[in-house]
Image (cartoon, rainbow, N blue to C red; front, side, top):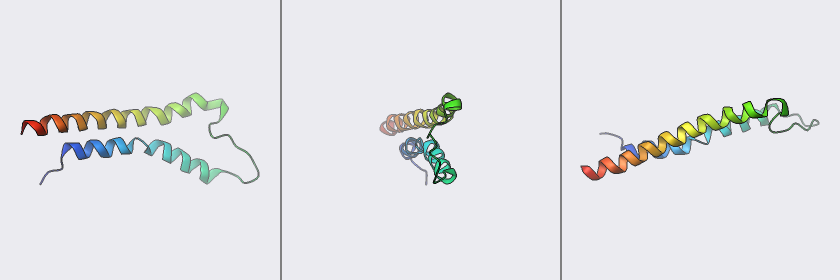
Length: 77
């Protein structure tokens, strides 16, 4: 039994939210009650956004490719 390529594509697309969820969880775990901390630190804002955006984009694009290939090749069978 094989897993359809379409399913793998859907899970990769859903997995694109994981880097943001990991950053949000880390932010909430290290947040202090009395101190107002910005969600993205100003001194490393660009680097932090890129650390979230690049893996998310890779997962999303890979998911779209798998999904599209799954639809294309399934119709050929």
